[in-house]
Length: 124
Image: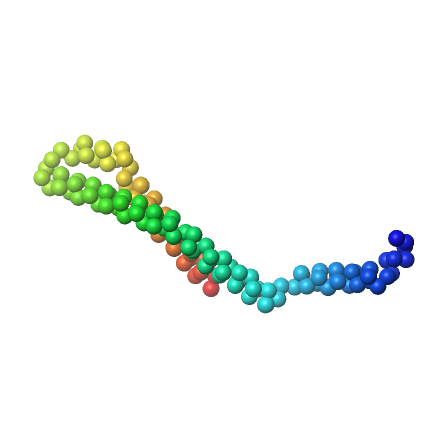
């Protein structure tokens, strides 16, 4: 390979192609944006079936704990109504932190949809 090989047709073609590709990479066209958006949509659609088992388990956990939370609430109401000793029951509920657990479950259950909706609203 000699110095004069840099002036060959192949070398000049490589240089021209490199300049064109660099210029093309700098400009982000509407077509490329549309392809990127379509890729995002396709990826989301492919991922949805993979999340279905998790969503079913999430619903079972949320509904099971909500039933326990509501039951413990109504037991407390019955204790108050019939004037049973409520202090020990309140200590038991406070020990298990049922209110905070319920807030966490509701936050995780509804939080994803809230964040997604907020992001869509912010994007507009």
